Image (tube, rainbow, N blue to C red; front, side, top):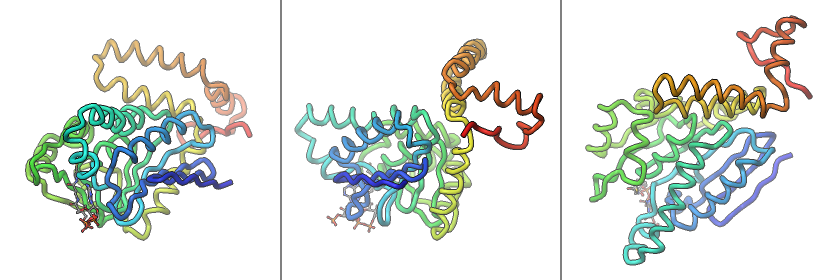
Length: 276
Ligand code: COA
């Protein structure tokens, strides 16, 4: 059953396991104001443990995915308000990186238009990104006297090679969805008219898979990035045990039984049959 919750700056739509989160300031190209960031933090926190949310899809209303930080309300308005500025910085980084990067279910950025500056943080924090071929990306900071701060420069290293990260940071040159796919900033670029259907189809794949296994796989892959081999090995053994302990659906035993005993399933060819 589909349901929609409309906040002042965000829309949340839940539909059969997929939760669409839409930044909703289209007249400001979905630039991130402190009020929008506060709502997004509340939204993401509430979706983390929400059983109706199996996959989170982040997008923007109107012509833009997100035009970055709000120059008026996040930058200028807080210039002489250090306490409010500290709070706003904490909130924006919490939702865009710490909560979204660590979100315990698959996340997809659906880039429908402009994706500028600070928006790269949530773009990269998502596990996957699909974009319209004519979407416009740009690290515009260098054009007006700031650097790709917050966590943008750090996040770039997660997806881009060094030459591309340096090129686009230092030139501020904008590029389209096709280029974004070529430099591996996004998963795939598709014609704008197909973007929602392609994203939906992709997201639905995760509904067939065991949620705890998805969580453990995602967390494991991310955690070992910065570990040495020995630490990674130890961590992954412990994580595997944690997965077995948490998985009340018991995917491991179900899968083994369906393959070895029942001969109804081949793990190399698709997902095991989950209990109804
Ligand atoms: N902060 C605050 N307001 C913004 C904004 C931002 N980052 N991006 C767009 N807006 C506002 C504009 O000021 C304008 O408001 P107004 O109608 O009250 O004048 C409205 O959104 C529409 O923007 P406009 O520039 O007319 O739209 P456009 O479609 O012609 O251009 C962009 C879109 C994204 C290319 C352009 O708005 C832009 O360059 N924005 C800034 C991008 C940026 O540098 N972001 C990085 C910040 S970290």
